[in-house]
Amino acid sequence: MSLKIERRRARLRKQQPIGRQSCGSKLDKVEGRRGIFVFDTPDIETAKSLVATDPTIVNGEMVAEYHKFYGSAALMMVNEIHKRIEKK
Image (cartoon, rainbow, N blue to C red):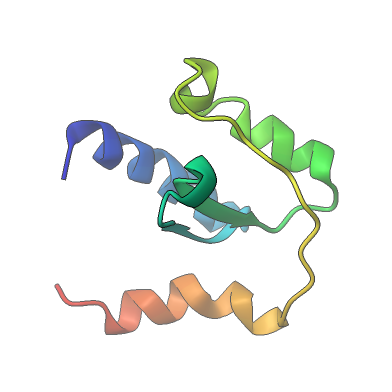
């Protein structure tokens, strides 16, 4: 894994304890989409403020899109469950 990806993951992990990022993953690059993050924020403006500090966004390497997402409240448990079952 590249140092760049590790730094990004470390930065995103810092947001998790405050309940901001509920999950994220790589995408298949179809139509140029490389990844997805789902944030738990009261509105899109708050999500934009979190993403605005991402170096890949700031440097123009990626462009963020913002959409409201309505899903199961169980999604907020993903990170906690992942920590219990991930391979160490």
